Length: 175
Image (tube, rainbow, N blue to C red):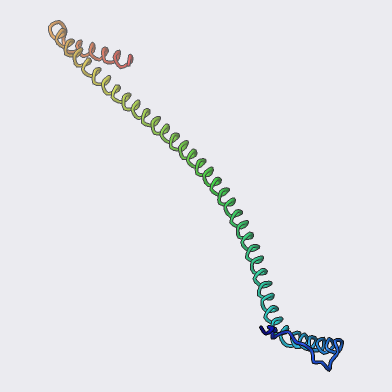
């Protein structure tokens, strides 16, 4: 069976010694290395630099977004605290205003009740005065009628008038 030889294994020609072949292979390796560094690495370097710049820019944007988000969160917290304070203040003002309005309404109701009571008392006094006047008038008419009747039989007209006038004067002095 023939012996298999790998295609990538290079055997050096017989005219070259091992050392020479090593130098030629070293020069070939250096040449391949130089081509890779000179042409291929810059091509990947541009891609890598672009990618690195994109990563740095993305990181910067993330940091900026985080900072902006924290600022907005802090701003919202401040606003919420201010809204809470404003709400408490407005509620306290509304409570004070309601209490003042309550006191005003109660005071007004007391005044109206007192005025109504005074008007009622005045009305009662007027009605009482009217009733007293009516009673006096009726009493005087009754007394005069009784006096006329009693005096008609026993007194003359001049004497009757004098008695009635005295009686009316006495009645006027008592009231």
